[in-house]
Length: 164
Picture 1: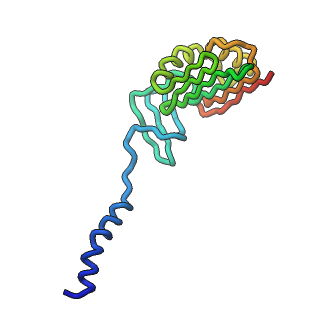
Picture 2: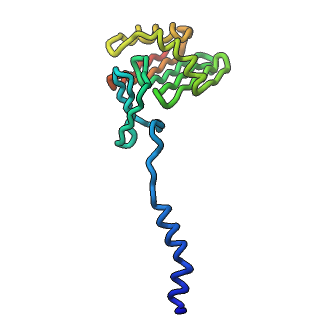
Picture 3: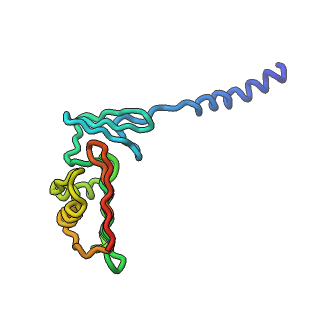
C-alpha cells in the first residue's frame, strides 16, 4: 500500500467530521429568541421575526395593548421597582421595596391582572400614563425617578420619564 493511500485513509474520518460541523439546522419552531420583532394579529396568531425569518405562533394572543413594557421606578434609600416584560420572551419583576424578585411564569401571572388595568394608549398624556401605572402597580408617587419604555401593538415606541 502506498504511503499516500495510508495518509488519506488516516485523515478521511477527520475530513468527514469537519464536513458535519459545517451543517446548520434551523432553530426549533415556535421558540422565540431574544431581540425579536413581533407582529400581533387580531385572529390570535403572533408572527415573531428573528434575523429576517418569520415564525407564526398560532393560538397565542397578546391580551394587552403593548408587546414590550420596561418600568423602572426609583425611590429614596436605594429602593426601586422594576418590571421587564417582552411578549413571548421575558417577564420579570424586581421589587427592591419588598425584597422580591420573580421571573418567568410566576412574574407573568403576577403581571397579568396589573396589565389588564392599564388602558392608556399612544395619545395619552405623559402625566396620565405615569399616574395610571403608579396606581395599577400600587406604587407611591414620591419617586425620585420614573422611566417607562413601551412598544405598543402597532409598533409605536414611547418613553415616559420623570425625575424629581
